[in-house]
Each structure stands twice: as C-alpha cells, then as structure tokens.
Image 1 (spheres, one colour):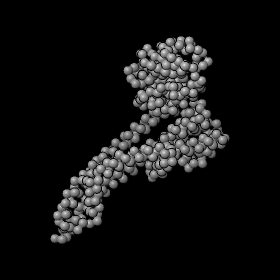
Image 2 (tube, one colour):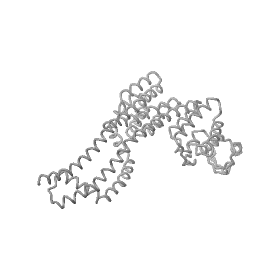
Image 3 (cartoon, one colour):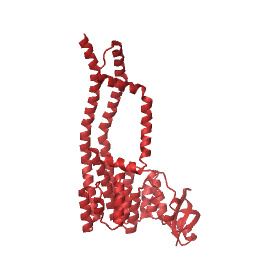
Image 4 (cartoon, one colour):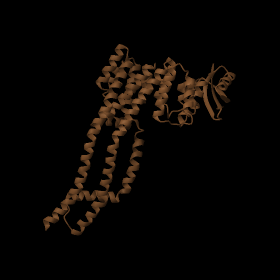
Length: 403
C-alpha cells in the first residue's frame, strides 16, 4: 500500500488537499468519490510524515467556548457508539454557517477518506494546539477517543474559568490605574506649569522637591516625542530580544523570582506541565515523547529548558523525579508526588493529583495577589498626588513667611 498526496475538489467546489494510503490510483479515486470529493491530481509519496509541507493549513480561529462545546459533544457521541465520521458530520450540521461548522466539515471530509483525525486537525494549527493533536493521535492509537475528548473538555473548561476569574479581578485595578494615569498627567501638564509661571513672576526660592516636580512636568511637556518613541520602540525591542533563547530564559526565570507575583507565575507553568504530561501519558504517549511535547506547552522558557534537560536524563534511563530534582524550579511536593507515582506505576495519577493541587492553589493565590495589589496601587496614587500637592504648598509657605 502506498501513500498518495492528492489535490481534489468537494461538492462545494472548494479545493482540498491531503495524503492517504491506497493500493493504487483507482482505489484512491473511489475512496474520494465515496466521500463526495473528486480527484484532480495525485502523486505517490514515501510516507505521510515525509511531506509535512504538502498539507495546507487554515488561518481559521474559533472561540474557546466553541472548542469546549466540540470536545464535550464529541465525548458524548463517541461514548454513545456513534462513529467518528458520523459524529463530525452531525456536529458540522449543528454548527452550519459558522467557522466551527466549516472546520468540522473539513475534518469530516478528511476522516471519511481515511485520514487520521490528528492529521486532519493539523491543518488548523490556530485552533488545535500540538497538545490536542498529540492527544488525539494517542487516542486513535489506543482506541480511547471518548476519554481523550473528555480530558480535553475538562482541562479547557478549567482554563476558561480561570481566565474569566482573572479578567474579572482585573476590572477594578485597570479602571483605577487608567483614572490615576489621567489624573497624574493632568497634574503635571496643566496644574504644575501654571504654578511654575507664578513662581517665576514672584522670584521665590524654589525648594528641591518643587524643582524635581517642575523638571518632571517640563519633561512631559517637551519630551513627549522621546516618550512616544520609547513607547513604540521598547516593546518591539523586547519582542526581538525574547527571540534570543538566553534572554528569554533569563527573563522568565527572573519573573519567577518576583515578590508576590513570582510564585503565581511559577504555579501556572508547573500546572500546565503536570496536567499536560498526565493527559498525554494516560492517553498512551511514551514518557519521553510526552516530555518533548510538554516542553513547548508550559509557556515559560525557564521551565521549558528544565523539562528538555529532564527528558535527556530520562532517555539515559534515569527516573523522572530525579531528573526534575536537579532543577530548583520544581518544588519538593511535586518531586515527591512524581516519585511516588513512578514507584507505584501510577505516574499519570500522581501528575494529575499535582495538577489538581496547583489548580486549587492558583485561584486562591490570585485573590491574595490582588488583595495586596489594590492597596499598594492606592497608596502609590495617594503618594504621587501628595508629593505634587506638597511641592505646591512649600513655596506658598515661603511666601507666607516672607510676609
């Protein structure tokens, strides 16, 4: 049986491309015809993975809640005994005239002609991450597709709840910071300049604090081109610097050492690591391959490098817990749980327990962070306004004393 890379068109007249296994061109054409696709051209290849660039990718995106709904419904349909192609067809019809419906129709077409679902999903990289594709691949190999879809739904539901909590917690600080910024700008660009002209006319000796405030005001009034350049140039320079592995590693590691916020940032990365590795390992993906995939999913370059180095240790035959213990980024609690899981042969359960632990701690820690952040922000605002007010009052007191 050979692999054929083909180009065809469907009933809607749209061009479709893919790669499937078939005995010959006649068999390929018949399989495509049964799926409602008409062959235009085909060429024989060595293997599906040998031509990753032959598969066109789609720029389509869908909302996270739509993706969660897809996972939940797929789990239910597959548990009920509905075939994979029929489940995709049903959901595509239910979501007709939407971007999700378009994606599901494309998946159904590919699955109907024999393309594995994970390879069909790879055509939509902005919708299905490497984690999702790897888990679907493992689910197809192990025959545990309902469980895989259920795990994905559970994880993304938690992620959606956490994102919602963070957004809700940010509403008040963002409003206060915005109002504070406008107030400070008004003080330094309108109030202070008029006061400076008054002091100049009176020829008073200006205190040091007032001189500092006047200098800041003058810089804001006349140095705005420099500020604008910095506001545009610094983010661009930072993004370019983050492409340098050494800088990105150092920056992420420094973030994890910040007071108050650092521990929360570390917990996010560790939660992603433990949960993703648990799902991948439970789905049948080997530990070494799971570590390779997880390294790109933690969202933290420092943890990513540590996971890559731990994977090399596992390849050499060392236990995972010992490899992770060589890095100070992983807390002792996580190392102990992984060691227990490896000893008992239930590594997936241990990793999932660690993930549940982090997932429970993270929302509480977010509340603590914002409980500290809000008063600090208010004290900072009061201090700025107080300094400006004091810089105005001091020269007036001098004038009063002169009288």
